[in-house]
Structure formats: C-alpha cells, structure tokens
Length: 335
Ligand SMILES: [Zn+2]
Ligand SMILES: [Zn+2]
Image (tube, rainbow, N blue to C red; front, top):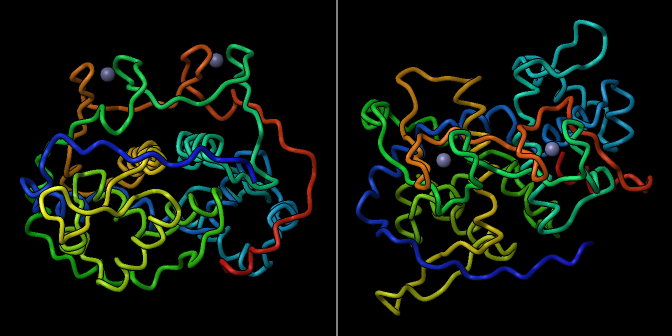
C-alpha cells in the first residue's frame, strides 16, 4: 500500500449550517446523486466500469481481471446494458455515449486514489494525454473560467426545482437501508469504494459538504436511521474522511468536520451529479445551483489535463498499468 498523507483537519465553514438546514434535506432528497447511485453505486459495477475505460470488452477478460464470480458479473453487465451504459449489440460490451460520459467521474476516482493511496493491481499508475503527449493528472476545473475548483470555491443556491421537492414524499428513501456496503474498508481503494458504492455514506458526506455538522442535524437532513448514521459516521471517521470533535459552541456535543481527504471526494460527487443531470434527468429540474465563486458562473465542471488544460475524453487518455499481479482475493466479500 502507498503511504498516504495523513488527514488534516478542515477549517470551519464560513456559514452556519442551521440557517438553511431544511434546504439541505430538499437538496439531498432531490439530488441527482441519488439517481446516479441507483445505477452505479455498487462495488462490482464500479470495477466493471473501470475495466471498460481500460479497454476491456469481453466477458472472460472482465471475469479474470476482477476475479468476479460469473453470476455476479453477468448480473452487473445486464444491469449496465439495461441502463443504457453498455451496448451489447456487437456480441461484446462497449460503452455507449452515456457510459463514456462517466469518464470524468472515473478520472476523479483515479485522482483521489493517486493522491491518497491504496490502488489495486488494476489501478493505472500513470495517465498520458494524447492531446498534448504529456503524463498528467486529471484536474477538476470550472468550465467557464478554467480555474481549478474545490469544495470551498463553490456556493450553493436554491434552484426552482427545490419547491417541488419541498412537497415531495421521501418514502422511497427507506429502501436504501438495504444497500450493500463495505463494513470494514481496509485502505485507500476500499475507503473510496465505501464512499462511492454506499449510498448512505455518500449522502452523509454530501450533507457535510452542504454544511451539516452534528449527528442530530445529519440524521434529520439525510433521513438515515440513527444506527445506519452512527455506523457510516464511524467508518467515515476511521477511514479519515471526517474528524469527530467537540463542538465549538457547546463542549458537551460533538460534531463532524471534513479532512482534506474527505474534501477531495467533492469532485467525485459533482462529476457523478453532472452525469445524472445530463443522462438521468428528473422532472422539475435540478434542486440547486452551484456557483463558482471565482467567476460567478453556474458551475459546469470539466475534468482537464494538468499539463495543457484540455478537456479529457476517453479516446485521448492512455494508461500505464502496474506489472501483472495476483488478482484481488477479497472480492467475494462485496458480492
Ligand atoms: Zn469559473
Ligand atoms: Zn494535455
């Protein structure tokens, strides 16, 4: 395992979470993140997609590279085809335009692992941009002004769609409790999978991105049952995405703050949300607008080459894989 930088405690956010707590619930309920996770929020699905971006198209190659049970693989491929992400017309498995549009998200997952460690044998060591010929890191940038963007550079505002959400029932939320998750992620790659492949973990982290800090507020705004919330918060702290500390305004309470490691998940979330906004649109429009503070434009984030600033498309990026190593053996735990 790579030596990952140790998490640092984030500075407190500029705004008070209580001021728009109700809005957070509406945002979370209607966020495209939920729809995206319905489709790709699964351990095996995410590994299959990575193989697709590495150029794999054949059932046996997926099976061998991932050491995935045949039945599991077959079921996931069928789901991906059903969602219009894979095209099986030619007898193999090719990404559709909808599937290729997940590339920015796949690159942000790569960048997170490259920075925080824990890559597995199928995690490319190096990316090269054919457009400029340089080895590079994918960078999360504002599509309007080109500046690098992080959580602190983005302001959230209500969009008209939030009114519809205020009246919407949240009964559907409960079924999430049955979602699969990694109970005990061991290191970086599994940590990030815990967040990307577990709906509650990702939703809770998103609530922290929106300013929620205390257990009570997180329970109210996410709608998570307290046992689910306690478990996910425990793992998010153990995995270094959050720190638990005494609340500044009341020493008897604890709250949760982002670490740099946790804050670096933001680009993964937004690339997924933008994908769902485009490919899985809902009636009534998006519930929130993200504004890039730097230029004032509505954020239309792009993933660009750190060397030349050009937008990264699947056909323009080549990979260097580590030398062949034994296939991962822990896969059946995530069945
Ligand atoms: Zn901008
Ligand atoms: Zn480039």
